[in-house]
Image 1 (tube, rainbow, N blue to C red):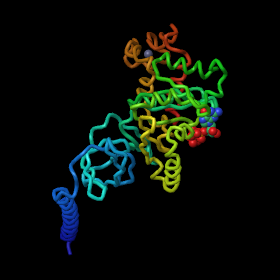
Image 2: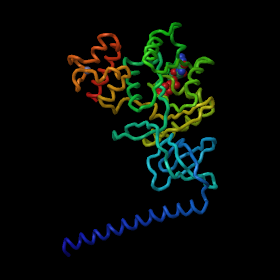
Image 3: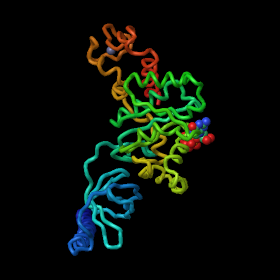
Image 4: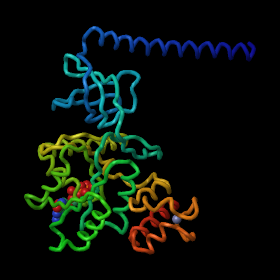
Length: 337
Ligand SMILES: Nc1nc2c(ncn2[C@@H]2O[C@H](COP(=O)(O)OP(=O)(O)OP(=O)(O)O)[C@@H](O)[C@H]2O)c(=O)[nH]1
Ligand SMILES: [Zn+2]
């Protein structure tokens, strides 16, 4: 048997297999279209993905607290918690998602192989939680802010455990004021008093938020207080996520009884600064923005170049030395990672 003939035969087999596959996919799409046409599904309506598990999703309609387990139409991929979708409800309460609306933004995290994967979408604000105990290391807050700025989602600084601070707010209170002066929204909170979360409730209203921050700053405690009835479900979710590596980023959307929405997952809580480039870091310092572009050299690296507008602004005191030092530290850490 000649080589040529053999390869022709192989080609024929491959084509046959592919044709069979295409036919199967077509059949499934036809079945689905058939049941959509047969009226087994209700009319198209808007919904929000509140959790996802591979090719099944939990969807809620905007005016309804019922959760509908939905599957995806064959051509839809990569939906995440927070996505706005068009779906159709079946008689048994389940449904099919037929389309995804455009996203305002998406939060991404590197997977174990270092590839960026979307985790959640349509978030209004990233609440960066810090506290006196454990104290934030030198430029931790700047790192979080830069990472948040790179997503295009508004960061909010939440100083938790204010019960541990001296009357005048101490060092961390002063730090918070400096960030407020840069234009950042800031909130003080404590889970230890009855009215300790009033300001936070206000900030969460009518928005979709995520909490991030170092271990031990009180994220779980805050969420338990904000979602008293759902505390058990949070526990159940994290138990599930311990079982397999793929589910650790499974995010869930909660409607807060006092108003607003919260998207939470262990993966989101660990959101950090793993995948930024130099330009993103530079642009992540909001007070640099007016100054950037005024350096004498177009390719200025803002190290020791003459006519560097950024260094001049630091010299004049328009940009805080601590923030500039923090900027340099973050750039250095990108190179070594
Ligand atoms: N004094 C004080 N302690 C608090 C407050 N909020 C939380 N804590 C305590 O701080 C510790 C850590 O709280 P967690 O809620 O587990 O912190 P976390 O950020 O969820 O930590 P991870 O789950 O490791 O990410 C617990 O012992 C809480 O009781 C607060 O407002 N004041
Ligand atoms: Zn410069």
